[in-house]
Length: 199
Image 1 (cartoon, rainbow, N blue to C red):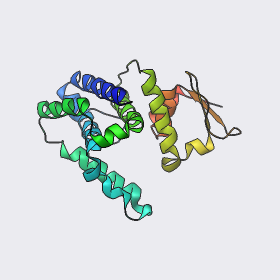
Image 2: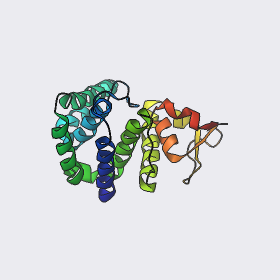
Image 3: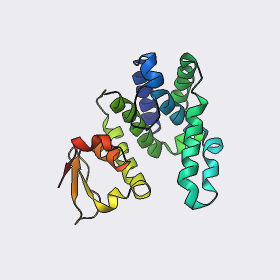
């Protein structure tokens, strides 16, 4: 998965290189309040897990979500005033040389990266051909995060229409869609709802 993680990072950079300065700095994404620049700051920040997110492992579990939000926002804030060219140079290095923690967690992080790449594309009304490995990873990310974020996987049975097996309670209402759309919905991106079929 490490090579696929590198490949998806490079694909994200290609997407970002195609944006105007206005889109890059102020364009809409599916991450509320974040521009494509902010999303890039966040995904780069994941490579610095110990300093950015390590403290989340300790402390009151009831405040985990709030502490996670603060850590994510700190990563976005870190790059807001950085010149675009310098940020993109950093991104190129990040794409080719994932940190040790990112290499160890490549299977998981591919899903996070795939979701955030789609956040940018969908927010700007763009699309792409999504590689099979990324579709699978986005779906896995949704299955992983839904129990903590919104419990949708506990109240619905998700049925991929483009491969993969259904998940969720057998007797629950069914939701049909692509692995990517279902994964995005499970992570709370309601913009994809028109693409889904609810039974």
